[in-house]
View 1 (cartoon, rainbow, N blue to C red):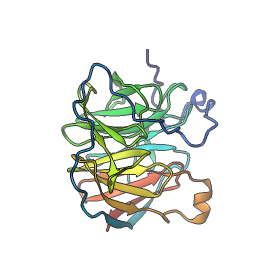
View 2 (cartoon, one colour):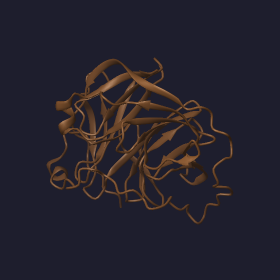
View 3 (cartoon, helix red, strand yellow):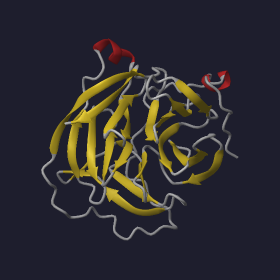
View 4 (cartoon, rainbow, N blue to C red):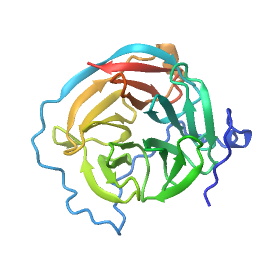
Amino acid sequence: MVLVLGCGEKTDSSVSEAVHTVESEKDLPAQPTSSPTTVEVTDPTPTQISSPEIQLLSVRVIETLPHDSDAFTQGLEFSQGRLFESRGLYGKSGISEINPNNGELIRWLPFDDVYFGEGITVVADKVIQLTWTNEIAFVFDLDSFELLETFSYQGQGWGLCYNGDSLYMSDGSSWLTVRNPDTFTIEDEVAVTKNGIPVEAINELECVDEEIYANVWRTNEILVIDQLTGNVIAVIDASGLLTGEESETADVLNGIAYIEQTGTFLITGKLWPSMFEVSFE
């Protein structure tokens, strides 16, 4: 039975005792996660479509906002003006709703110490959250954080996004699995390539129209990926957002949330003291 602790404004003391000693959350999988044997993927070969010229974009900061520097951010998601965040690390994982204007915690659901939280996405009135190596995805009611059901999958869970029809999930390799939002079964696979070369360590994902914005773990790059072909069509340089002093205690860039009302994004990172409303130019 999945153990999820009750809601509260701060992490329960029993949760915070078992913080994992490793400050980076992942070991890269040696190869793409295999598909469940019950699902047939007919053609996992990268689509042979010539790559367009890759755009090189930069970040324009519109506003700098506070962010909890204790939050090991694994996923960030905007939905109808509300901001949801997944946090990782053993003993510190959970899901929260935070105030997008000042970063203050509105709701917090900590997990049992055996779970390491990963990417999240919103599907209708539910939020789906991955775990790193537990091979379990939690499905919560968006308004109450009540646990509604769980999905199982093989391999590691890293990032997750929803394009209105399908889920896209990363596992740290160069592959994205396309999943049914109701059953979580694999419907397709997409290889992410840059100029024909596979891109490893695809992490946090954000679906926007027919594109996927993706953090690349341990870099300051955000990739813009064509959902259909997996081709990288733009590379965003997101370096230099933190001061030198802030960077000393912060971890890597991670967390992309699209703000549909303005066409801008919120981005942040693990243990970052700030989140940034930005446009990509």
